[in-house]
Image (cartoon, rainbow, N blue to C red; front, side, top):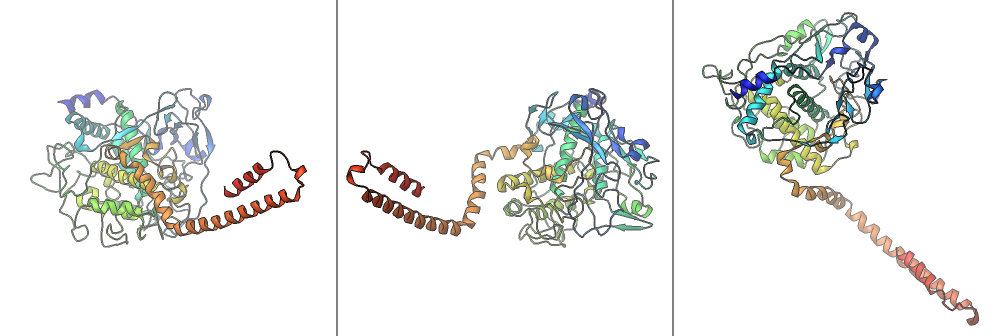
Length: 530
């Protein structure tokens, strides 16, 4: 009853964010390559009259890319978003949005001057009303058409370079499913040719920042859709889990009694239709997913290939990941060794840090374990467990950032796979965000995790630990420098004393000052000691 009431009360809200702003998909916008819509608050492009922003040229990074994608000018996602737009709103201060009508993450209020910190909580710590509200929000998002955004149903070439726009409406939940598909789809090379070794959100440094932004945008749009300003995505702590304990009808859906590959009829999600799952069909026709329903949500947790994923990740696995000091290494892809990113993503062993193509662990293990819609990269966001899973992955990323406190320069500036350099704009977000923008603490983005707050008393130890580790590596150098400094100090002190005595002896007794120049000698000696 509570869920039905919530559903009815919230049905009137329609808004969203994610990919192509509806205000920027006319042939005029596409051919002029400009997306600078007016802000509703003052009617001026980007809210310029109110000082919110201005329409400006996009500055793209020219840093060299890795060798994984040996083509140029064949994929709409290259040098994002320049194929579609070269002028967008550049927002000022704490303003954000495709029209500068929103606040940056972590800010609130009519002028975006108020700081706030929201807390993501374990889904099992939610009260029954809180949990039911979350499930109702998911259902509402699945049935609410976005008023702000649309998805392209053809490539820029198929749109005749913008003269024939091809876009379609989509609901808020599926908008984000489509975004996850689009960022990871194969490159369409024409004819029947494709290139699979390309992904703008996985298998490279941008994996963690991209999904961090994805969750923030999803969270923000649910807040706007419902008017619930304090909504946060709950997380599922899967460490040491022996089964899918959220796979019940009270939470994310149990198995169907007659078909274990489907969800129970009593589940919220048994009637959901998935999109963007027929990859071979899109590739053979050289087309994009157009958001058409493609069948029910599938999930059969635990009945997966156990030779590839023997178990779910353990607490020890997570701790090993956190102990790795390098964010990225080597070729910066799924073959990277001793890379925190690659190990957490699941392409390297959580026991050794060595890349292992025969195993799927950590983040990847959960996708494989679900044995259904969530196990296919491009369509995995169809399953709402995706959100809870990636919220916990993001919390591990946050732990690593707090423990090692890396400088921004630790995130690769150049030579990462296409789309993953520090200054690259993340596909397919408009407004624009760079990978490096999200290589910072979640607290700076306005959110935290409840279980990390509980460990705050140890934050000082984590803070000082990194400095002690650095000091231990240069201890021999510091000791040598101290010894040299001591010898030089002794020499200078002796020389200063000798000069003072000589100066005193050279003066006749009647010419010596009454207060003597002892203070001058002491001053010189003091400076030599310093």
